[in-house]
Amino acid sequence: MYRERDPLLPDEVFQALLARARGGDADALGELWQAVAPTLLQQADKRLPERLQSLCNPSDLVHDTYLRFHTKLKTFEGSTCGQLEAWLQTIMRNLLIDKIPTSISEPYPSQEPSGSGTSPSQGAQRAEDQAKVRKCLARLSEDDQQALDLVVFRGLSHKEAAQVLGIKHDTLTKRFARAIPRLQRQLEIEGIRVEDYL
Image 1 (cartoon, rainbow, N blue to C red):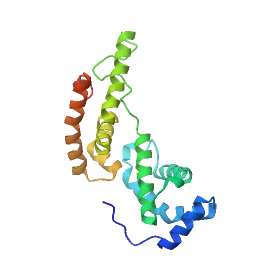
Image 2: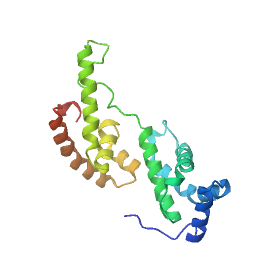
Image 3: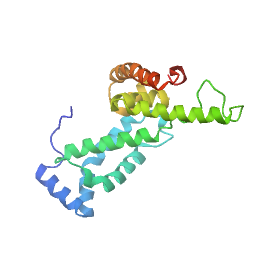
């Protein structure tokens, strides 16, 4: 559960700035951003595994978060600066996950690439199976989806995935261990060969 620390901005000041920012006041938007940006940059530094720094650097990640902040501010439902910070950290985490390449659209690891003898019907079957895998993943909890997505489909280690999500390594390992059998059951229901993905 999120526990608020001493407010970065007093609630009354925050709420006044928020109302002005939602009304289009760029100065108020800037003041809100300045209140949370240092913490976001610190979090980006902590969450970005070293081998992913070639995909994006922490300041780029924070900049992308700012762009989302600017366009999605009207959807923010909190009333304190701490809640804004938590909301922006969630946006930043999701942006980071989106930047990590995925292999779910790649050929099965056990099969040859399409240029080496894969027939059109095999390619169509593969595409259908991949759509079913995405459907199976969507049936799982968000925690299960993130653990599986980062480790299985994006190739991160458990340690790197935990770092991206901002959780302890042991927590990620437990989530992953619980998520695997859940996904296996879903794949079996869809008639997908589990060993092609896990």
